[in-house]
Image (cartoon, each protein chain N blue to C red):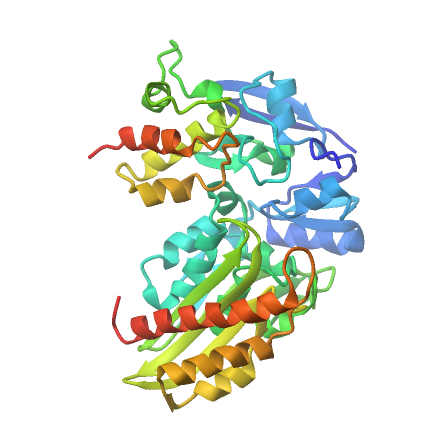
Length: 155
Length: 293
């Protein structure tokens, strides 16, 4: 099983990584690169905790082979705030609305929430709930999360 | 079961052209598996349900990423769910296909998964299969020696089994544009939203005033393969539509399917629910075909 060299940009930084074909993107992000904000939970594509953004699209890190993201531009939760540490408005909103309980789903929720707001600046509540369907909050704190996303709508 | 990693080892190939992909497939034969979105295959690799020596990644092949509209609608098997959903969203005639993808729901899976993978995987539960069956869709299969196009209803031959040879790639989904006065709908029941379907039903109806010129019905998770229900369709073709007729057709749909009984979902439940799915789907499609929203 031959290792492959891949070049990826993660959170505005360039990396050259050597990955085996069977390595999962979540493990490369967490263990090789050391960005542990991305969470492992179900490992079967049901919960969305492992969400990372690849070329502008949220995908599941636990069902993506790392070797397939060669050349990609990626964002993980660590890259959502500005370089100087200023939080993204949606991160601020999560704090303001107490949208975080245990926090395990939060990285994925913030990334899909931002994805929705970037593509649809003024989403309905139904659309917000549909868009986060792939992200499970086992504390069941959905109302706070929906409220946080709603508060970032641009009218 | 450890879902944290893939224990199985394999070689990875990322061909840059379809021809190169087909050459690799011809060389490795049954030792190879095609990777498109990966939402099914990567899970299978984790669980040891597939153990290929070679994985051939076709997700980035430009030849498989196109959507063309005309008297014949065609889209490449490499289009992700999201792009097909967005393309058909404003076209109410094709609401069945749009709704089937919408029902898959998860943002991440819509970005990753492809309609080609959904079909080629061979699952009787494939959400996009029933609406495409009601459009009389065809699929194009290509190998190094040439290509063949066959009806989607000939494509699935058993649970997770298709007619595809090991040297073939599904490259394209094709169907004739639907005539005016036609609409379609898709209904699904699942454990929770954005889950694997328990039973699905797609309806495409051609309407002229109160007469059903033709109706095509297809169901998923309803038997060994995604299937049409010809006896139920026959009851509607050319008939004046009223509520009693639709109720009796709904019962016939329940009889036409051949549902499995396993896990949480019994055969009786699937037969009962498919009638409900059909009725809801039919009336929605019927109203839209008549110009109502």
